Structures are given as structure tokens and as C-alpha cells.
Image (cartoon, rainbow, N blue to C red; front, side, top):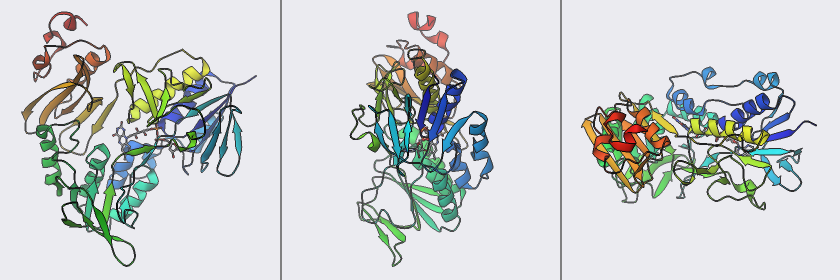
Length: 413
Ligand SMILES: Cc1cc2nc3c(=O)[nH]c(=O)nc-3n(C[C@H](O)[C@H](O)[C@H](O)COP(=O)(O)OP(=O)(O)OC[C@H]3O[C@@H](n4cnc5c(N)ncnc54)[C@H](O)[C@@H]3O)c2cc1C
């Protein structure tokens, strides 16, 4: 008898799982349920669309014929509201029940709301979906001044969109540096200068205490905790994700911030798997539970989950994720877990070239490269192979570092 697979979520994790399931199990029934109104698109590129640099068409990855060609049943606008692991069913908002032999939860996250007065006013945007990008673009084209909040990888996308649309911008940050958990002041200063060159002014030790609105409930001003006021008819907020775990309530599927899975992407239920941003997976390289928020990692997790749904134990997830920023004249790449570790080493080579490696128990667990990305393959190899680099930190950040420069056992890896 053919197996039935139900996938919740048609992001890159869910869609890549469907593709692999079809390859591995040609006879299976495969259904994808998504609450979005459109099939898989490239979430990474929606910022280029919002900047006005790309039309809609190339953002889309799959049209509906992609699913028909693979005999995959895609149900758009279908929000799953309940999971019954004992009955092996999921239920959608309209009451429709879907039975599964194996279930994949690839449900990602939803942008966190800022818990301050008037944060739901007209003109305040969050950024996760293509529809968000359309709304941002439309508003940005008429905006006069903007405020961006959230000093991380998504906040900087919003700041870059204001710059590309020639809207004067203030970028309010809580500390003294952009992405202060991964970059030092030296590294962050390169980013601050690049923002200033694009007419986006970083404001430090700031944030938002509340927003002021006009009679029509449109945002007019952001007031920071120091009482400083920033006029803005466009506000973009990117302060993190709330992972979509509500549908797990009432089940005994284990989760915390995300869904707990093993290295085969299986939950504590034999027939329920999870993949993508939503997982708290057992990171074989880090040696502890971790969560990734990156496209490549989500894609790989979808593929690995599918293989193990067909035949559990086939392949484990072992991956060094990367995330690049392409808004500036210099390249930027973060890899692994740059905000973790018990030690680090960094070096600055010029006004636009800097590196920092995060180290845990004498091994690289992540890093950030600005200006010159050429050593990334070497660092990722050392991380993937868990090479002990104790006592050789300075060698690692030599500008022209080569693997052969490492002494002893490390060099032979
Ligand atoms: C603007 C932006 C820029 C980014 N840039 C980069 C980048 O440069 N590099 C990089 O590596 N990563 C980037 N990312 C992150 C990357 O896009 C994500 O890590 C990746 O898309 C996660 O894929 P996913 O499939 O796990 O989750 P998602 O893409 O979030 O997909 C989950 C899907 O599940 C649906 N869903 C959730 N709950 C339910 C439910 N109950 N019922 C039905 N459907 C449900 C959601 O609507 C969504 O469609 C960016 C993200 C954004 C928003």
C-alpha cells in the first residue's frame, strides 16, 4: 500500500522535502498544506523586490504546475489548526481533516511584534512574506522618512530598502553596535559607515518606547526610551521571530523555542518530523541543541527529513549554515553560530575588511567575514571537521591564512 505524507508549510524546507519524497517514494501520496496564498517563492529575494530592483516573476520558484507535474497535492490558503498524533490526522481552519502515515512540520516563524503602545498602527511593517514585501514596496515609494528597529540580519534588509528607495532613514539600535552579539565595535563600524553613506543614520542606545499616531491611526513618530522623537511615516520592525508552535499545544510533541528533533529530523513521535527554521535540532558539530535561520540550512533539513521519513536512519543532518548580505560595496558573510562560543578571535585589515571567529572548546563554531570572503571554505572545513585550533588563534586570522599554516594535528586534517 502506498504511504501518505502530509507536509505543513510550503517554504523551502517543506517544498524541498516534497521534491525528495517524490524522488524516494514514487508511489506515495504527498500533500502540502500552506496558509499562504501562493506557492514557494524565494524569501531571500523579496528584499530585492521591495527595493525596486527585481520584478515579481523571478522571485517565484514554483508555479502550481510544478506540483501537478510531480503529483503533489498543494492546498493553498489552508491553515492547519490542530494535530492529532494518535489519530494520525491534522485539521485545517475550515474543519477539513487530512490523514497521514508520516507528517512533516515545516512551519517556520512569524515576526515578533514590538510590545509598545501603537505598534499596530498603520504604516508599521514587519517583514517575512512576499505579501509583506509588496506592502513595504508600495508604502516606501511614497514615504518621506523612516525608522527601522532591529539591529540584526533582517533589520539591515529593511534599512537597505529605505536606502534603495531614497527615503531618509533612522536605524534605532539598543546597544552601541549593529548585531552586537556577533560583531565587535570594529566590525560593526564598517556596517555603520556603509549605512551612513546611504543616508541611513544609525542611532545607538535607542529603541522604541512608543509610537505616536495621527487621527487616522497612522504612525507619525517613534519615541525612544530617552524621550528622543523620530518622525517617520514608514516604520519597519525586525526584532526576531516567534516560532509557529501554537499548533503543538495540547499534543505531547516536544518543543521549546522550536520543535525538538534528532539528527534525522524526527520528533519524539516516530511518524512526525520537522524541518527548517522551526527545528531545535541536535547539532552534531556544535554538540548541543541549536536552531538555524537560514535558507540553505532549511533546504537541507527538508531533504534530510524526507529521506528519513521514507527510511529512518538513512542520513543525518550535519551542516555549516551561511548567510550573506549583499547590500553594500563589500561582501559580508556569517557562517555557523557566530553568536555562540566561549572564546573568539578577530582582526581588522582595512576600513572595509574584518573577520571574527567564534570558538567553543578550542574549535571554530561560527564566524563573520567582511570584505574578503575567500577564507570561508577553510574556516567552514575546520568547523565541519571539528579541528582543535587551541593555541593557534592568531594564525587563523592572518590575512592570507592557509590551512597548512596550522601546526600539528590540525594541519593534517
Ligand atoms: C526578508 C528576508 C530575507 C532573508 N534573507 C536571507 C538570506 O539572505 N540568507 C539566508 O540564508 N536566509 C535568509 N532569510 C531566512 C530564510 O528565508 C529562512 O531561514 C527560510 O526561508 C526558512 O524556511 P522554512 O521553510 O523553514 O520556513 P518559512 O519559509 O517561514 O516557511 C514556513 C511556511 O509555513 C507556513 N505555515 C506556518 N504555520 C502554518 C500552519 N499552521 N498551517 C499552514 N501553513 C503554515 C508559513 O506561512 C510559511 O509559508 C531571509 C528571510 C527573510 C524574511
